[in-house]
Length: 283
Image (cartoon, rainbow, N blue to C red):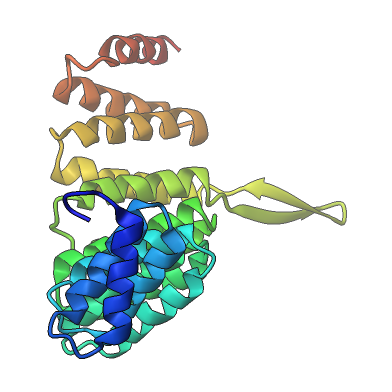
């Protein structure tokens, strides 16, 4: 394997070792080397199966973590991805500590995602977000669940709810402003509400401004706490745009554009906003 790079002959030798000497002291290492050789000849089915065998049989091996990682990576490339997922589910169930369970669940959720089972991936990420003792892992799980709900499932209400839970639970984290901005965009773009009214016996639908006001509330939280941060420039502009075009409130729009120029006079959009502000003042 290492000097002659004869991987087929290496595979035969490792396989004979595993078959004839199952009590060999370094049987886990031989299993790992066999899987690695399969991978080097692009036999991903056999590689994934052998890594899976190591994870199932030798949980205390020093090769366990890397074998688990390779199994997770290769599973989507094989026909037998379900078997790898079942092994990982068992890893979650037999985890000794909450920390180990959270890490194993994150890996399992990633495997569900790679296999196209987005609903199970979301469920697993949400479980980690709720139960993980590690705040960093919990935040990552929240973020991944929200992204899948938004981008893959198109469940915008679910994505918004997940992000709201996250910013409520972790209000002072570095990514909070980005998540607030994401919430604002979801409310203004994807959660349009309609109000009903009846005229001449017909039910008429009219766009409600509740979602726009909710978006502005989230943008306000950004500009109130981080007025000079780069993301606040975008928040000021979104507020100005919404006041101007959706709520038809010129005075509030002008205030947002003025605040934008006050905090970001050299921004790449500054000249464009000055022109828009002048136009509003002339109307």
